[in-house]
Length: 350
Image (cartoon, rainbow, N blue to C red):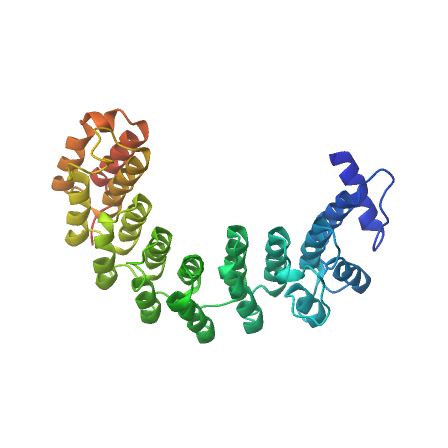
């Protein structure tokens, strides 16, 4: 319980490697160690403790290995090459189940990735980023997501080698690898980088919806406001077969289009006025997913239309009176907020 964990934490503060307390399971002692170390944040000041956790990376117990990796992430200095080699799974010492990034447990791999991200944050270390990017293709989603976070923390979009490597993965990786790579590009790329925009554009027609969505999201993050070429690439995705891609396209167009952009406004209005919009399998009721898309359409109008645009206001008010809008509280709220925004002064053009 919390009292027992607090007691063990006090032990950790008084000794380098405390023995298990009477009645305290080892896993609780390990968690208490990690908690105390995260609070202290003293890197490289306790070599004995580092060595003990390095040994535990090779334990036969999964939780022990996981806690060891987590703790090392708090106390290892950036120039400790031996420990970093252990965490990245490239040291000469091996085990039957692997360790570090090569551990057979996805929980341990995920925790190790986070630890490496903590240690190497902001270093632009090429070897570290390359090792982390190998996990973009990991079989476990949580590990891929952790690898993305770590690469963003360690690398910088100013480094050409990082963009080169990410673009290579975009062109040749598996679908799950491309999804994570596109997300990484969206977070580290310089704005309006032509190579990145082209690499993202090339997967907009990918067979997997998750790839298309991640590319659409990244385009909205990388493209500068008013980039006409990106708008031309995004607008056809308003009619994508998957509702998640359609919603992402609306959100990205709202980020890229300048206020008063007639091309974007007309395209958004067509989706709002489509008599089949939000229908699924020709039924007379809207699916929850497609209602979600329609909310994105309405909100996009609020971000792209100019203040006082009577044509937009007229269309919004007409739809506000429809039964399918009035019966959905969230959709009704989106219409009212957008009408208020377009009627106000904050959305004026120019």
